[in-house]
Image (cartoon, rainbow, N blue to C red; front, side, top):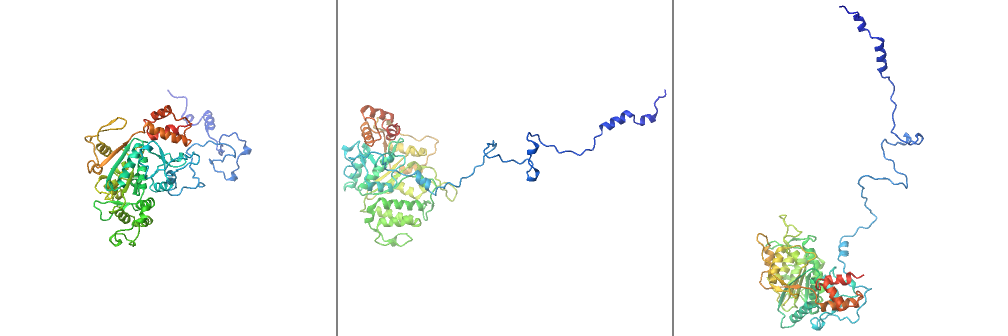
Length: 487
């Protein structure tokens, strides 16, 4: 059947299709820029002539608070004065030995060469003379942790161990025991008075005219803060510290005024000192030369020690505080092979340990004394085993038995440490400091009360209470319980 619609009608658009195409055609109109939504009137809009960039932040008005999201930038305050090199360390180690607000004790007796072993003074506090204080300050015997700043003048408690030390120093100063050498290591819990015992021993040696050389803090030697250099001709290689030796020579010349009366016995031409030295120079002047020039400090120190140990010289006292730092497996210094240097390879520590172990002797007699530290000390298993073996099975004054420590299998021990302390069996005496007795604690509290630091009545009950709170008379805890906790 033939269709009624012709092909021409299909090719020609209908009026309805023409109207639809006209409606869908987009008009060619220029686009108008759109602005972000804002409630600000159009009259207050920032004009484009001010050069405001699109999206830039506008500074807030004065007096308004803004929310800062993000990390704040740290702005250095250049108005504050920066501390000078060494200023903070000097402030940290500053020692105050008097307090003008404390009450002076008028009848306080000073310690001297005659009463330092008097048993009638046990439990009493004796003062230190001004000359003795200056000499002890020169060797850095005072510690910041000790309560010197609470009282009008420095004083020390004459405990039983102190009187025993005074008796030993007095006997060795006489002709009978002049050639005797005592090697001692003082141990004990924290605050038991180990550094104070070392100070008292140095004070007694000074009163008897001994030559005192002290290494006040071993950590300063091993921490890696002083210049060092290899010692020529040493085998195995040792390392010297010129700056530290220069400071040590200054301490020796200041703390030992009797060296000004002792002349040099060797010919200066026989020594290896690169500077000219007069033949009649005193030992104090010789130490001053090394203190002024670190480059010649090592040969001058070697010559000075040989002169101090020459026959006919006074006895000597060698002290050291912080023994554990000298027994570490390494120091803050590195060898040319980039390995840490052992503390015993440092010249000054090797020199001291040679006298402590007994490898080198003291011809004129003397004391080699070291103290351990519990507040600032690394844990050294070799040192603990060696001190335990030296101390042996013994009983403390409190009745506690101390058993010997044996080596633990599969644990590595430093043989150099064991050899330094156990080179000669029985040559080193280990002295363990315990707490004070109640009589000694009462005498110390009475001194605190007379100085105005204790306002309570020092009775038997008060003494017993504080003695028990301090762990059986531990002097550091006793001071904290009586003086430090006072309201």
